[in-house]
Every structure is written in C-alpha cells, then in structure tokens.
Image (tube, rainbow, N blue to C red; front, side, top):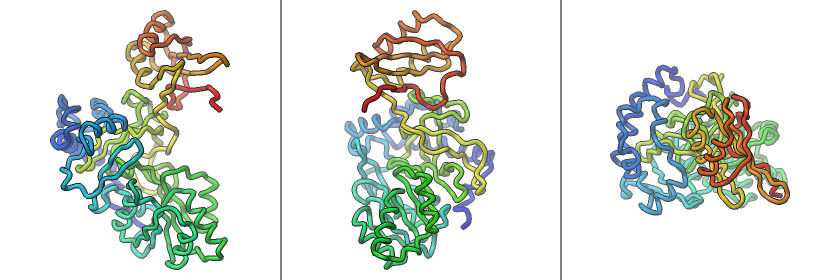
Length: 407
C-alpha cells in the first residue's frame, strides 16, 4: 500500500519550511481561542515561534496542570479552541482528565497508522478498543472510515463472541491491546474456528513483547503498534519496516530532560513532550509523562519524519524520601542554580533502618558544602553528595533512581 499523503515523504528542509508556516498559526490560534493558553502565552509573540528549537521558550503543560485547570474552568480547562456547542464528544481518562473528540475525517490521525499497516478498502476491522468513557474505540473507528475499511465495534470482553464474530464475518484486521488478540485466537482454536482471514493487527495501550509478535507472525498476522494518548491522538507508529516508531505528521515531538523542558543530547532518553497541530484542541508542549529517545537516520519504508525508539519508562519519577516528595523539577532547579553542574541524579536507598538519599553531580568543582546548602533549600532534605566526572552519569532518562526494595 502506498503512502497516506505527501507529508510522509517530505525532505527535512521541506518539513522545516512547513513548520515555519504552521507553528506561528498554531500558537496564535491557541492564544486567541483557548483561555488556558491565553494566560500562559501572554508574553509570547507567535510570529517568533517558527521552528522546533523555538518551542523551548514555551512552558510545558503537564497532565496534572490540565487536570487542575479543568477543575477551575469546566469542562476542558480552557484548552479547547472550540465552544462546547461545536464539540462532538467528551471522553474521560483517569485523573479524571476530560478530552474532546470530533467526527471529522481522521481527527485523531490513526488513519495514517492503518494505511502503514496495509489496511484499507475491503478490510473488515474488529475494533476491541473500549467505546466507554475513553476515546480509543472512536479513534480507530474514525481511522477506519478514513481509509475506507469496514469496522465491527465490539469493544473489549465477551471473548467467545469475539472469536465467533471474527470467523463468521471474515475479519481481516484486529484493533486493540496487544495481548487480547491472543485470547481471541486461543478461544477460536478451542472452538475449532477458522480465523485465518486475520492478516493484520494494529495495537496500542500495552506492551508488545517480541515473542507475542512472533506468535502472531507465525499465524500469518503482521502486528504493528502505535503510540498515542487520549489527549493527543496518534503520536508515532510502526510501519512494516519495524525499525522504531515514526512521528505522526500532525504533531511535533521533543525529547527533553525530565522536569526541565530542555532538550536532551541527541540519542539520550528523555521525557516525551508533544505539540499538537490540531486547531480544535491545540495542546502545545504537552507532556505525555513517558520516556523515549530519538532514533538517528530515516526509516527504510520511505517515510522521512523523525523516529523514536518507543516507550522507555515514565518521566514522573517523583518519590518519597523520609516522608517528603522529591520531584524531577526540583533536580532541575538544583542544576539551574549551579551552572558548573552539567547533570544531576538522585539515588534513593534504605539501609534497613532509614532512607538514604545520594545526590550525584557531574561537575569539575567539588565544593560539597555549597551544594549541600542548595540541596537542603530546594529538596528540604540532607543528602550524601557524590561528585562525578563530566559525562559519567547514565544516559537512561532517570534523574531520580529509587533503589529501595519495596516488595
């Protein structure tokens, strides 16, 4: 199957030129039509935000901030650019956080993912994503319509009926969490059903283990995964090349040092921050709370956008030490206070009697008394301090490493 559109094969220069046009428009739209951004972007001139590097000048919006805003300004916190009479759907995620959705063609942009998986006209998709409260079911229904496929809106559960429906209707593609397909196939085997018509699976919302993918492949099912959130829709997706996840053309992804909003060094693991170019729900520099890293080079499939390696953990590494929360943002403040420190990492352990906190600092200066004062001021705790050589701390995205055995 060919490319979804010409956006997928733009050169780096073409993509940068397009960003220079669309970013100022997206920032201006958010500032003008979404009250939450009108406040946070009060001092921002949209015309000066013309490339990915300029985004660092804007604040990061976290899920906790969105949730707090929605409590004060119901129902969507002032982050939708449409009035409520123009909103088609409102969904709920844990928190609770409320997200909007529209019936417009490929509004969540998962059609691009289905196309990359070879799904289109003539396919019958069994959509086992939930249609209740969460938007995943509607995301893939909307995507199926975009590529001209037929969809069976089963939602999750009732596995025996799922298997029967797949056999009776000649389902050719599965949509859902990675593991649930295995349960349907297993039930089909138990009932003696022919499910050989299923040739493709598009999955999200859980880990796709290599052995799981291989088991599907042995049954003639190509299983590809996408990475998205309820607020942003599709962020990145696999193609048949299966070499990383290609960033969707409707978003801009930054990988930043957790808690700071500042970019990590090339290839390092960091926090995934996404700017959505969706004019209806323009989330600008929205933190997913996930960790990932950029892959170098281009995908062999011919799509040219940036690739990420997939999920590498959670960026919210807040932990309690001696009853006090320690957060990545505090570690970032510590580094900002001391420009000679290039990087900091907190390790938390327990000696069987009490918690022990160790702050590791990459720096050529060894004035531990100075650093101890800052640590006590910022973290409200005393700590052991270890001075480390520049470049010696792990590049794994962790700024707080909890070594305690909580089992």
